[in-house]
Length: 258
Image (cartoon, one colour):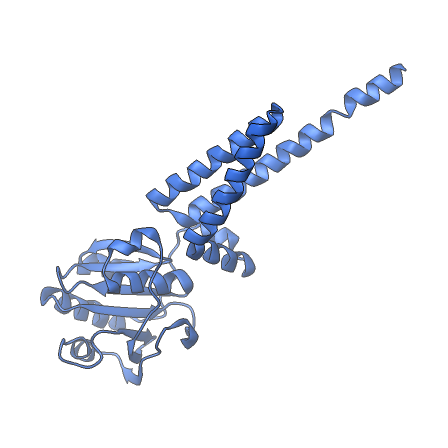
């Protein structure tokens, strides 16, 4: 009988360990989602969901069956709603998970652009002039290999021209046919112009202009690029990477980031 009691007492330890590991893995998963999202209003939404999960777990532990059933139903309904509302964030998470880039979620190191100093100078000088004249512009700069054209809503007009500040400023003049789209830059060439990009559906982006949403949208979907935006209303300069806008920037700060 004593041996049986000891076995029963020792059997309490494995379930506790399993539950601790289970809770730890759930918290780690939630943390990764929070790192990816990074929007204040969305973070509050996720925190509310976490509170519901904890309340559901406590009610189950306390054997409050009716309350546990109600909270479980709320958790399931909230999970479905969040999957719809945060679909772009979850898609990004699943893409990074599938590509084995989980560790990159926690890093903030910028990839080095495959451009020489002279090319960067041309880009920055053209952006500076466009900003001073309050001419809207959107540049996609590849940072790690070519972007698949299927990632664009419309691939634009092929140019395959040598990059220069004069050509960039000409493309974005309001009276030209290609000024509304984006310019795709690969190394030292302007590959195409008039590129139409997918718009970001993130909550914070919906209050922004089309160029900002386009810059956020393509950098959410494609890791190997950054976007430079010039506002035609204010002339402010912004840089988008991984769905995040860095603004406002001076031309010197832009050069430093590039």
